[in-house]
Length: 177
Image (cartoon, rainbow, N blue to C red; front, side, top):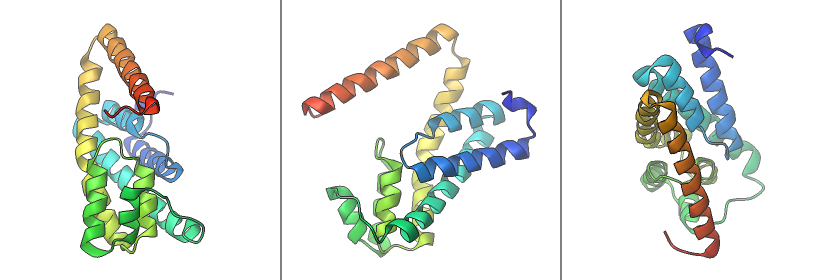
């Protein structure tokens, strides 16, 4: 499908909807959607659409998790337990900090926050602010990658895949990275 053939408002709506689906699923990466936004809309508009999409997706997930899942279970993990038990400013800063940390699963942060005592507004603000730096970095990386030759793009893809497999192997063997 040629994304450039769709009207810009429709592209924005599709992007926000896809971000919402990705956020509710909780395990799918949204970086590819940021890449599409930046490559089709440009760096700043693409990042802004990604920020809006991820914020809307996180808010929808928070509401769904809180309403539907709260009565069943809560994620068990040390860092997430602290968030579940937190309220007010502490919960706000925990969400902000977890969103700023790379490799912390977004779905688990949202799920843990849904089990906490924090309000929807507090979660929405902390979550959105925390996602902004990562989205800016993703947008800049995509813009730089688009300008590379195909050979360098393939090299980077192979490098990322190899790095991931090495990380997984070390993680499984119990090595600290």
